[in-house]
Length: 321
Ligand code: GLN
Image (cartoon, rainbow, N blue to C red; front, side):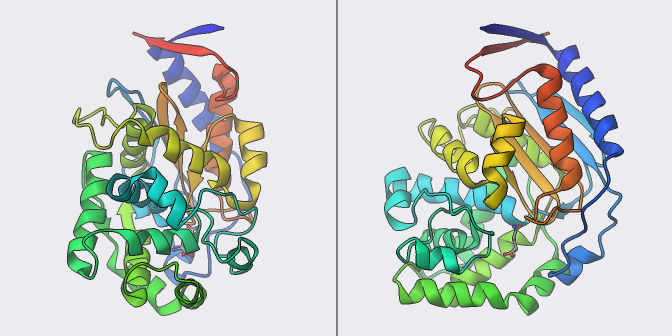
């Protein structure tokens, strides 16, 4: 079916979804990272960006929060840019784990593979793949430059969050050494873990995440800068990864009920991609038991259902003025 939507319809649906989700309660801030436990749990923002650069923002969309696991998306894109999608498939994998983001068991079950760059193990592996090898500063620059390109503006490291995570990331240290044992860390292990921890501690806004999402939806062209950030062949690959594991063990339920591939972070951020149509981002700190923002999920789901959209619907969607 052909569906034509006006920008005003997008605005109305987003505003309504925001209002609806504002009243959704439940969940709790992540508490295993001390910094996150103390963030104001009443913060809530929703941003939508179209491939032509039109932005719709509601609520706390310029508040800078911890990007956390949403950072796995840009670094997976960078690893694909540098080593090709096939290289990432071979060195990390592209499989859903069906298990929590920090699962050690998943590494053992998947024949000693990190499974996908969108869980902790695969993200640490992806950081180890980033070129130039052996040079932490240059790798960090490549990681942050790539995020800047995707968002059209730079992320800012939250020092307190970085310290908080570095002091408490014992599980991720275990993952790193287990991966090293299975030859799935492709650079210095401590450096790779540190880069992963640091990228999770980057501060980002809902508005910036919506630009990143829209860049993916627009086949690699940043809607604000018009720069081709990555080759268009990478767009379906990253969206496949997001669709299969973006919400960890609840990814199937999410896709089934929302109709949009999305990636979450324990900072409360969610990034959603409807290929060719729009990017969406939402942020609210309280999380469900899988680590996904309760309000952000409610807002994105409501938005999709109000517009009658879904990635599996087979519709051809056009947005007009
Ligand atoms: N930095 C967090 C961790 O490694 C990210 C987890 C997440 O956002 N799901 O545990």
